[in-house]
Image (cartoon, rainbow, N blue to C red; front, side, top):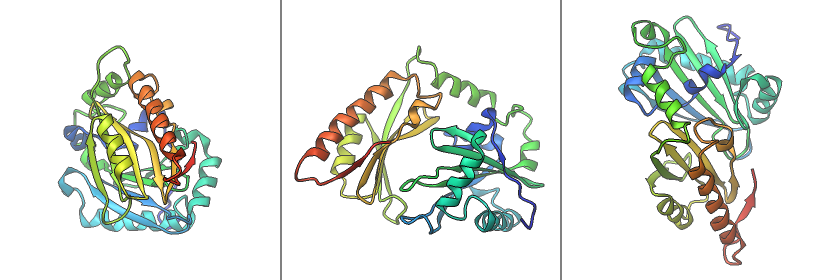
Length: 271
């Protein structure tokens, strides 16, 4: 690659850098510039992307924009962002980058920035998230821990994984995924199920955010094909959570019954 990009597999301690933080102070201390959300389209050979700014976009300076373009272009030319099949082969070749079931993380370092690429090589999902961190700005943040997470953020994640204490849950539905009509609604599990079933969108998902810091998708419908995800069984914040496990059972019962109704004609796939 022209700027010597050599992705390396993420370590367990770096896993949280591949997801958005709900804590604004943690985002500042990590010096997150923003993240790029990507997918390869229905045939796995397209490339669609959306930029999501962090820290009020103040770190999104011209030098970063120029480098981000080069990084993405090189990852598309000869890396895991070329197309869906290339990403799948790349993740298979580097299984030590596994972050969860079907999810892999790789880190690209340049002189000033750290790029954390989260890959999900499966059709119908967002296939890539590329988080960018300003290492020079991080160096000014004396409160960050050696792993790149604040003590408060690390404690919050540890608490979210503790099944012996109470937790807060916000169930959400995203409709019109990856279109200008994309819309997010959130509330109770019952409300989210009603929104999901009542939505006329052929591209939608239902998931949960726990304690305002950990998020996971549970069921996704793409182009009319519905799939249940099992990432919650692998992520520390969810794998021992009886509330989420019970919710998944409820979703299976309600949505399986809906799919079996002769008037619906919905396709179903298990994950």
